[in-house]
Picture (tube, rainbow, N blue to C red):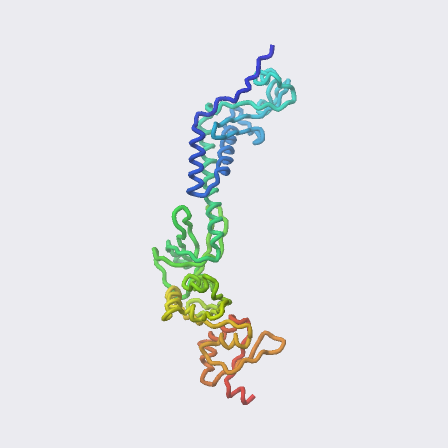
Length: 370
């Protein structure tokens, strides 16, 4: 007579699963790691532990190991095929043994066989622990990557950790608490002439975030034109609330920048808003950039007016567009020629980059002769 099947679940592993779930929920709050993700990693760890703990050293397919983990308990089953003659003990079970577990078992069926978790060896326990720790680390790196990816094109404050004496590249600690990460400030992204010391606090602009094996690799800059943009957004309430818009920026880091702005509301002075009372706002940006000069001009839909403003502080008599080309000819007073061109051509060069027009500057006397 066949023995009746014991349909009850095997006794759960003697751990407080409710406490485990509570801890995972706390972990989610602190580090942002989803509970479902960690549950899957724990189940994977338990399955791998069983597969490594087998006496026959057979690598049982993952689909043949089933782990059930809930707040009520932890259960493990191995799935085997019921056969009349066993050839592979890892994947098959004799019909007589199968009917000791389920009296209705038939040859060819798949049978879930409970595994006594308490008999796991030390190696299996270590495997479970390693998978769990690895899962937490991977999840932390994933959460951190997503966090810093969302901060691309933003300003962050960091602390200088060390400076590579060979390349000049600098490593900066950004973020706080559990979201701390190291960023790389390449020598090419550093403002020429600036000197840094370990422990110094600096502001950096996030260029990009790459996903690496040990966590996100954050590349930052202090030379990018958008660093000027972000600094003015912090200092100027009219930009933050949309009354003033930054249209374009041309920058030669450490030396000079030109920024074109426009008002989106009538009665707002866009240049005055950026300069601030007694020059306080632009002064704060200049101080952060260690003395970099900043020209703020009014953007215009009229290319001639825009180019004329971009050549500030020089006075411009006239601007004439070249037909069929994105170029223009500017006439300036003779005594303003050097100012319009700037030292080593910097003023004209920045104006051309700001407006997108090739600018040919002529003194008034030469224009009259021509």
